[in-house]
Length: 88
Image (cartoon, rainbow, N blue to C red; front, side, top):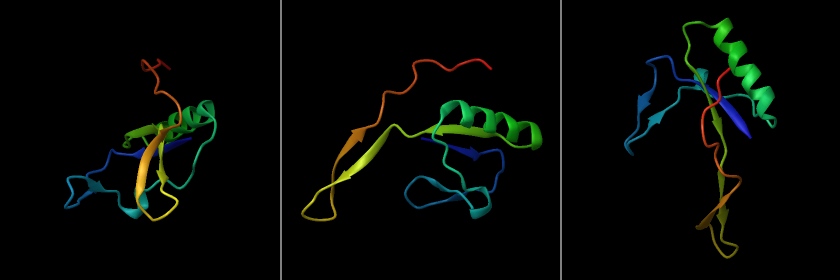
């Protein structure tokens, strides 16, 4: 699974936990299930909005909750990340 996030705007708000919050208008609205489709969409967005900085993120793990309570007991690897970036 892949999502595209525009990181090219200085509108991110600092959170108290060391991260930044993505404002609503910049949050991903579409989840891609095919890598090639996600790459094409990322390139399309970059061409349409030249002031943006579009990044493609891949899900590589998911939290596996414990059955007895709400605690997360482990992360399950979905697949190993790509070794090297590809040229387009």
